Amino acid sequence: MSEHTLDARNLLCPMPVIRTQNAAKALADGDTLKVICTDPGAMSDIPAWCRIHGHSVLDIQQSDKELVITIKVAKSGRAS
Amino acid sequence: MQKTRKAVALISGGLDSMLAAKVVLDQGVHVEGINFYTGFCVEGHTHAIRKQDRAKPKRNNALWVAEQLGVPLHIIDVVEEYKDVVINPKHGYGSNLNPCLDCKGFMVHHAHRWMEENAYDFIITGEVLGQRPMSQRRDTLPLIARESGAGDRLLRPLCAKLLPPTLPEREGWVDREQLLAFNGRSRKPQMALAAHYDLTDYAQPAGGCCFLTDPNYTTKLADLWQSRGDKRYELDDIMLLKVGRHLRPRPHFKLIVGREEGENNFLEGYRRRYTHLRSLSHSGPLVLIDGETDNDDLHLAARLAARFCQGRSAAAVRMSITPRGGAPYEIEVPPLNSDDIPQEWYL
Image 1 (cartoon, each protein chain N blue to C red):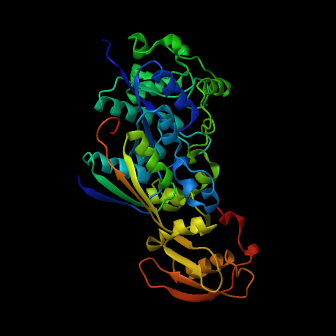
Image 2: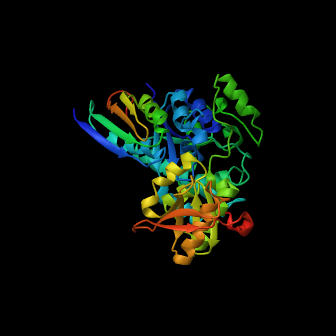
Image 3: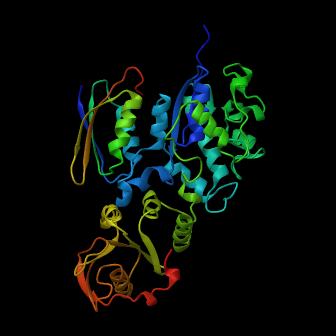
């Protein structure tokens, strides 16, 4: 299990979701991915994408300008 | 035991594609959704930029639909490939710069490619015969199937009974009798079916999901092409057309003026790549300049930008100008009077 970071700053939805989706494809079951975004739409979109694909949202940190969403990748079940 | 067939459904986030996928899901078919991001989707960006829109509940409708249906959704970035659809539509534009027929063919083509790469059996769309003047006519539905390469693996569950049986119907992968015969522009059958499935809170019925159908937006896109002398764009160009007031005081440059805090924040992300101005003596918007400018142009731009700050009635406004790649400097200018700004400068 390893930790990864994705810089999705200055991208507008759905690009942060697309980048998260594409990054998660290359990761292993149990890996974590920390996604750094500036689009507040990611606050709802990335967790929704995780629910659909069976990944878990471990943490969401929000500051004035940035949003950091940490997800745990699941490669079993419905995840893809 | 009969093999479970697999279908990929084009999910726009609207009601029709949701219902089409639901009808097939209910027949025991394994369905996954696919959604294409072209850069022109109203869906993605608009809610995120303007501060006034941030108070509204935010969701990506395609993701929401997938969650309601309980199916995975694959969002595909097709921004680069889509340019050819917008720039050279084989079947032309609709009333604005909307290449609807080419667009549908493009999306079905890409869904078909995904279907083959992932060993799926057929494609589902939410098309309804007679609903759209360009892409959903009796003569264009077969054209889309043919030109996309999908052929009779393209199933339109909402109007399938009005069309010749497709492969999934002929092979018994789906029961044609349980498919529908929706026709025309009325939304009532879709709303009734949504009520039957107990689906509420869905996105407003079809239409309005693409900036290329918006005359205000396409005026700015046409202006962009005209100013460059050819029809080309990058993703940043089409993003910026969604934001701010656009004024073209001279053929070779235009101003993009943030209208509120959210837009100013968005424009901040672009300031390193554009010459930009802001008022130092009064509060006001960030203003980007798209195009090449000399000193006279910048003086005019500063006077115009000063018009949009709180000092618009002052005798002079102190402005900061930061050339692209250069150091900022200050000038003091009298704001233009509103009478000095011809209406045709506004795009």
